[in-house]
Amino acid sequence: MNYLQNYRDLKRARGVTLRSRFRHLLLDVLAHQSRSSLDERFDTPRVQFIYIHHVFRDEEESLRTLLTKLSEKHTFISHTDAWTKVLSGKIDKPYMSFSSDDGFLNNRRAAAIFNEFNASACFFICPSMIGVKDPNVISRFCKDKLHIPPVEFMDWDDIHHLQRDGHEIGSHTLSHVNIADTAISALDEEIGTAFTTIKERCGEGQHFAFPYGRHVHFNAAARECIFRFGHTSCSSAERGCHLSNDHPIGANDLLIRRDHVVLDWPIEHNLYFLARNAADKRFQQSHFRD
Ligand SMILES: [Zn+2]
Image (cartoon, rainbow, N blue to C red; front, top):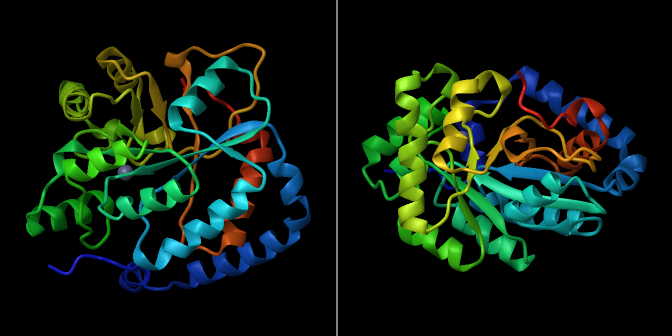
């Protein structure tokens, strides 16, 4: 099996559309226009969560470049510390926290680079895929759930290695389901079994991030199930950041917002999005949507 090793091969598999070319050009213009306000926006005291999925071979330097740039204005903190700070309502300076979804083997490469910057990340994994080596199972999962060519997954030794380096492990459901389409009777399995497995294997697992990540991929039944099993935090893929708040929010009411970064994108584009989302009031609502 030829597993995906470089992001350029993923792009080749997807093809370049007219829409993606236009989007790239538009972002060039927007990033250029907002260059002068970047530092000011990054000075905003806040907690901003960034998440990735992969660091392929040809993305390694981009992660270093991004972390170098962000370290100029931000203190890097772990997912747990970031969550604690948001709950306290007291945020005295700019903080960034990192996570990665899906549990690809190349997350080991991500972790090694985070280590260079003394940054602790949270890795959200689907326990049903950890240690799976059968190429047919991997191909089907990547195609059906992630819509990409086959990528290798970590095994439990890899996960323990991440923990030894000071990173955290969280749940991304047992098998990467769209929760909004999952029967209530299956939620205990997808959320509960994943929680128990991670707890037994890793001795931790308080954090949860739901697959696909937008409001439409979530519902009240899942929220109830997540906290009932013992998770204490729930992360989305809704963009935005968290500011100081005179009325601290309860853990079960907090929906963590995270900004998605694709390392292959030009750094100017990623910085533009992060700075824009740091300042935009529309992206600062921290409660679950009713
Ligand atoms: Zn995912």
